[in-house]
Length: 129
Image (cartoon, rainbow, N blue to C red):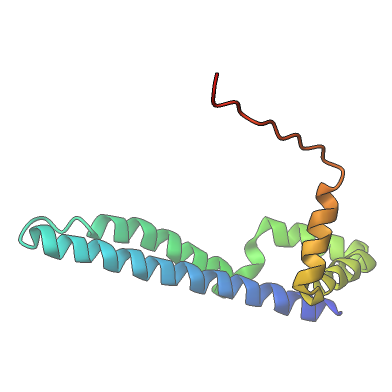
């Protein structure tokens, strides 16, 4: 897989993360306004403050994910790794695809195999003590 495809895949993941964050924001803010209107609709509109705080974080998430995705230090470091050793990136991407293609049975089996070396002891509890 080329670096371009890798970057596109990473960008789609960042945008998906932002969309999830935005939907959570809408849900929680809707719930807070619901509480406000059914408890003290004539009082101080306190849900404005959580909206402003979380909205600021959401704005920065948008900037980082959509408008300026290349500003992250992680991406700069990742770019250095990609330039230095593209075969490492290829291996990482191909292993991600292999994990996506694994069936649920194979995942369960590999999970079980990882526990095979663990010694678990079960002790009966005597209720008559």
